[in-house]
Length: 279
Image 1 (cartoon, rainbow, N blue to C red):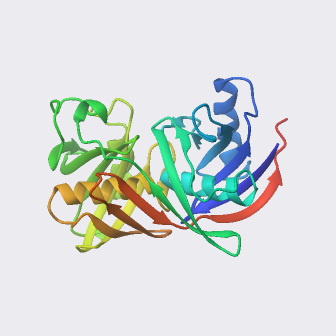
Image 2 (cartoon, one colour):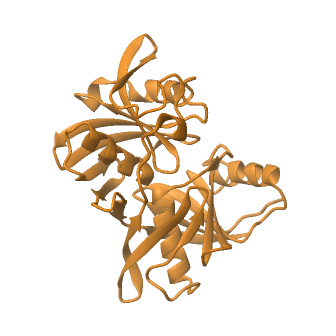
């Protein structure tokens, strides 16, 4: 099985063209094997580059634990870089089918190489039933309370095609986010589990974030999460619809524009190509 390894701000993926196995159970097993950092290639997820039905391309994302994600912000930038630099398209702006709907990346190029990718990530979703969140009514869940490990956490829930919980803190150094992350991910309020983001406000246009990613644990970056963070803090009145999101792996520029769509701009980096023995 031929593959390429790419990362977006350290959030790393194995990319393969086509469907390498015949059913979803085998695909889940393959994702776990290939993402294993000791016995496999090592990655936060497996991304499949497939033909779309309504668009030129389709992206499927498998987390390191074998579960399938609706969308991945860092992954879509890696996907876009891959298909352009492998000459699968000559277009610098195109559509990609995902489980979260049609996503539109726009490539910023330099001498034929992709230097950054700006992605129209669509509209943020705040309605509880559509995230989903249970036990908080039908409307938005903004700065509500969640009891975890005896602590009352204040959280906002947002979907960017996949579920996110945003928890603002005074200091990331003083909160046990690695302990709280999996407790929130698996909390009964989130029937599909959830990504979790702990946020420290540095300035109104600069946010420091630690990520606990659903199905992967602590990661160096989360693109959909960065979008959800800016949307959540905008709704809370602490951000003016745009900000730099500072993640352990680097920074993303996020803009919630007047068309109600959120745009994410950031890099994607090719690491190496290889062949994986499936036996």
